[in-house]
Length: 134
Image (cartoon, rainbow, N blue to C red; front, side, top):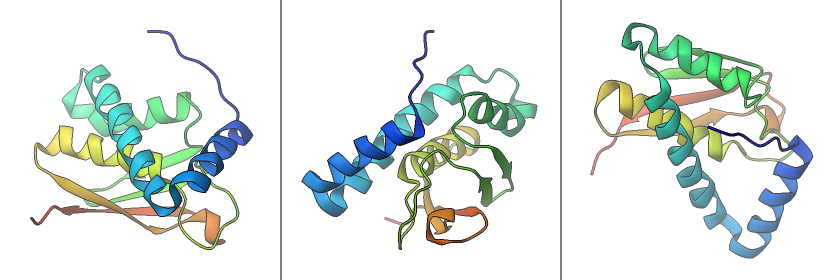
């Protein structure tokens, strides 16, 4: 598979453009895009026993995050490519990717919420996984 390189500033410009047109609904668009990326990453991982180690390696190798750790219901991230100074969480693509990875591994619907974000001045991003209640 071929990959492209895109800078953090280019990602921020793309996000700002979509946010200017779509406002708050742009977060849902970026979340959906992330889910697609996450499903593709999950398909690449062959060793179920090392699923989250491999997911972390891929996310770091692709410069999506600088560091990441997975727990059963929580993901901690340093250096997300989506971080920018804001008064709200900004890592919607990554949130979608994490949702798709957890869904692929556990085989059930989950919702991923970013409960802490470096964009707001925190020292790391923290994502919480919850089973979807419909």
